[in-house]
Length: 273
Image (cartoon, rainbow, N blue to C red; front, side):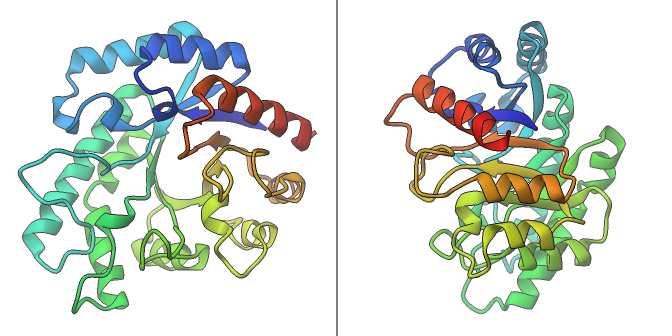
């Protein structure tokens, strides 16, 4: 099992320090939230991209990809995946093209598409329309993604976060509509906890589509820091032959980055066997 962690946990840390610390702690990869580099993807200069990539390479850490793609973006154009206005969808599709370039520049291979508030169903937009709008937006960057070996990974999220794409089955439905080898599924333990189907069964049913995986707990902390037991989760991942990263993503930073990072990986290594 390969372990990674998301960089926004290390608030106000220099990126080189983040890489050194997670390497020492036992992680092999890091996942980057673009807003930690700049408020807009086009404000992340070529020099900064090279600097970030070089810091990871020096520490021996793999930049596996990017996530929180539309979070905290400061833009004069609204970004919304399922917006009924074609111009808004076009601007959003263009932004995803720029995000794809960023991911490639950093040496990443995965783009996790969460962004719950940029995909909520707006008044008058049906679920079927939202599926088609999403297909349109994401398809625009897929030729570039394929060229650079980048895969977009749609992330189903629970109903507390969004009213669209709430289950792995919903994500797979969109994947089948997009019908592109570089558009796949991302699974998240916190999100799957809201599904009526047990998490290991969701993992097994999603085997053919899953390309990335987030480890966390519904209490917003890391794996092993809440009530979710990961033994059956890791067993299901192994059973399905998952060979990607298990990446720690948390939302409650109060225990501190160092404690969360250490306790999470110690628990995962102990549990995965």
